[in-house]
Image 1 (cartoon, one colour):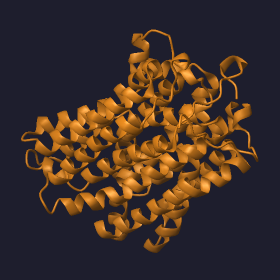
Image 2 (tube, helix red, strand yellow):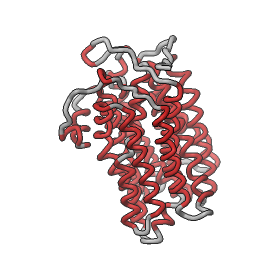
Image 3 (cartoon, helix red, strand yellow):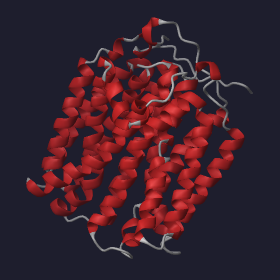
Image 4 (cartoon, rainbow, N blue to C red):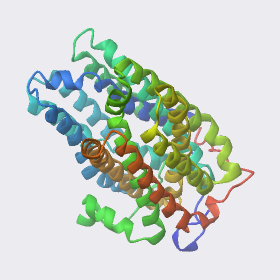
Length: 421
């Protein structure tokens, strides 16, 4: 593989199987905690404020501060290593959950989500760890495992949150905090450093790097990378709107309640886990990142358009199943293409930028979906979502990023090496 400028890169650092398992657990616990709060957050907020806007602002505060902090956390991990930054961010997540559970005022709820948002860049650091120890041609497969952890956390989290709420409304938050704290302890013993000192950035921290807008601006100055980042934004913008708006759509169109939606989302989640944990690992060596990303986005363009005009409720299962398959193909391959565009010294920074972009989509995607839902009709978030993904697809098709050697298919994929042990 090659660094920027065509120089031969050093081989990936090695990591033990326990370390990679820890990364998977970290992402799973992160999404489990998010999912645990879904069924209880509105009820906790209503103890202090009955406005629906307060619930929306609580969710937005997390995403906004994640957007602000993710590039800085990524740079810190490029400069000082993945291990200390990841462990500190996990500790911040635990503290945020404990404050949420103990909150006796609305401002404490917001403080808890702000703390978790600031330290919530642990996903991008986990991705950078994967990039450090994985050859470029295998990164999409490894990122697929992260996607599978996402899916498992999203499936189990809400159900667990509802179950624990039978104890009291604070129990789910305390449980999520205890899990995160236990993960810090586990990581202290099993997580090695994946970025050796000689491969860390030596550039000083500047305002442009600490400022999320500056980090985005620097990233978008690179032609091939900017196209992929715009595609990443458009794809996730549409998906964030679907996640937030879909229960309203099924209520308006088919009269569905929480139980029917829970069954459908569980079905979609299981397909997503299978795609990213099993299927993607078999497809990437044969077809390569670019082809799979293009095909996955093409499937999503079609399924989003079908959702907008779907006439019967039962049809949602095959259509959402196909959408989940397309999403499972797109997410890890697009992330892998972004990762393969930069050197080892920039993995944390660039993946922090993708984390910031993802946070922005979780703020503006739902707002857009709600706006067009009210102004145009229930199907509008989905046919407009199809347009956004079609634009993202055009950007990937037109990008030269996939012409790099490490992005081409290989019939002899190199596995992650086990090291130091």
